[in-house]
Length: 319
Image (tube, rainbow, N blue to C red; front, side, top):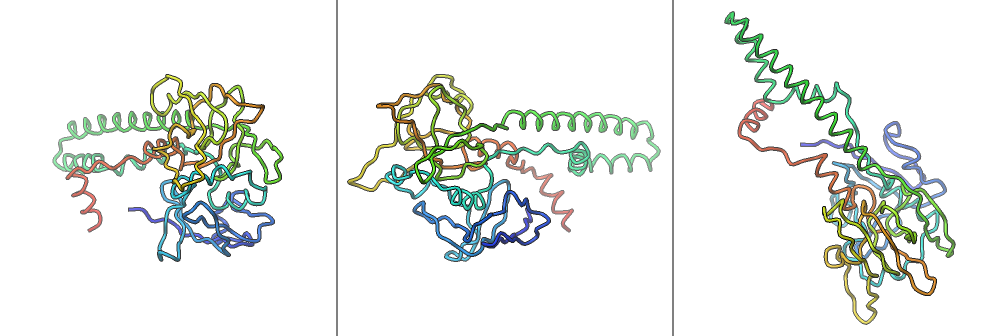
């Protein structure tokens, strides 16, 4: 069970519990309105946003359903033709969406040794060992209790070292920042940090390749990518532009239109363009909502092992 803090931010940039908020992250400088996503990929202006974050996923309050819902990106209930009409976002619009979605980064926190040690000691196995040591100590089995102490200590130290090493390796593997060229609403190009990308941004895929820092749908040009990080297969895959079907409405689906989608963490090897046009893609998802982010989340927050011993132990703690 998780207990999360519910926060509210207003259009003037103020927020509840300011001491716990990152001003750069939440500060909508010069923003008069906040945005809330709609089902068709558009956004509506609101005066305030109430939300909480759980396991790196943001949930916002939706009055229509009278409850919290997961923040929607541009990968569901959006028509394919929608992406072909995206010409870029203004700086102000980008800032508004960044307040909603947060920075485009996959941040993995490395716990301190004391934190890992504390979490491990509270596990059912080591609590049982503590009671065993106390019991055998009262029965004057000093040597047996000493053996349990030594073996448990060695096991605990090994476990802490392994967890710390895994967290460090995961952080070093997934952290990635790059410079990205985006289209602005006035048609100009601007180079920005990849952490500033938001869903709806129109980006330029460089001719000589790059590492994707977001999930994006290709709208012009062809791209050859290596998706080994996600699929394990090193065979290059060709991505083609999403068809612009004007005579009928077709909803975008990330699985059905996978051959038109560039996933975060994949490496672009080469691009092909025609008549000097730039290879463009529209950002679908950022941060932990990307395919790479979901993979990292599954590693950081694995499903708990549901043994009867653990259930009995937890129920006794509650009682």
